[in-house]
Length: 325
Image: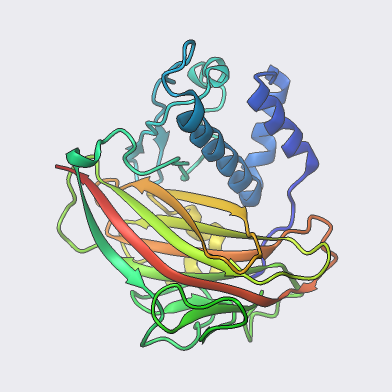
């Protein structure tokens, strides 16, 4: 699907300075400028924060000198406020607590994990969506989803085993084919995006409930120098979106979400399955989630055209709600 292909080297340099604690006031101003005008730059920024928070939890939690960043509230279009609760690197504290970065995220909140502050015995897990492509699906419908049920997006198909890749569960899996769909009219795209609208139901979830989206990707080795990425994203909505918004594309959808989370990682390309997951809180009033899964060709010098994916697969997509007991 067609997206902005702008991931400036300047942004990567500023993110490196952010991680090192070397951002100046003018750097922060410039980072704000880059993020305000470019949804893809915002995604890169969010992925960077998610990675940093994950590294902190893995290696530095409880270490001497570590610090808990004060929760920051980010305003939502609906007027609600969602508060991130992950621990961050000490070097972020001066910038974040001072409020210099407040407002950068807009309607999007990065979440490094689902309910990490709850021990397993203190939480309940309910699986609300489970897809293995075993029945009822043959190919995606074009575009973003307008109703609950059914996969939409770029060109895909259901497949059995291909080469060294066998379905993770059952006898079928989804195969990504093309970075566009018939009728889109795109001249350049290196992303194959698919979507699914999920209804959480009318009953409210308990306070502190979070949602975890997980999906499994696999790929066979590509040509020399070929590199690919895979990603998962979940977006919360109070109501079914207006069809006009959905026709404007992913960037417009992201602007009306109550909360969202995403993760993008390199795809190994060795025929083995790898799970990728992300999580978000469930703000009061959230009824629907849009699941967004994608593979992309990792080529910042992409010259144009529509990428075809030779052997890239998806299986066992799940959405779980984690609630405090």
